[in-house]
Length: 238
Image (tube, rainbow, N blue to C red; front, side, top):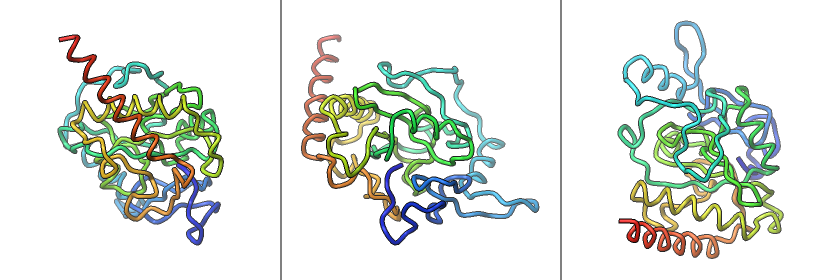
């Protein structure tokens, strides 16, 4: 989600013309979808890809409410805002994309559950550190505005506004860092700024989040510290 850059529609009704979600929506936080024609109907290219995989490929068994990150609470996003996959078997996961909601935690959950929204992230982190998982990590969330990045990344939304540094609480930074460190361990993702990126850094995006007030030095320090702590805990448990 997050704020769009000026000159690209800003707070307008539609997103940029990317091959990402199945439709454009009313909110500036959405990434639009390029369309293709199939049997007289119009489908986004991402949706066509999903249809093809659905009829041609089997998928791993699913359980409702199953979590990839155990401290999280499961809150399901609308199935219109993501597509089924079998990551990392079909797509390697090698990026974490950091987003800012441009709104509250409740707003993020509301719009990600809306089938008309056309976008959602895997996780949402609240200011008090609470984490909601809305999409399984093995599935492709429409969050980055770039099909390739959607397929290779996990998206983490953060409650708040890019122009309000006070929204980025220490508790939220640390909770998000624990989540990111856990993701990086499970998929062998290097803990560095090449692989942990902001939405603004995704090629072709017109979004600005997490913005200049997101403290990357602080956040990455927390991720590195948490990675080391988790590594020690795993070694002790063996």
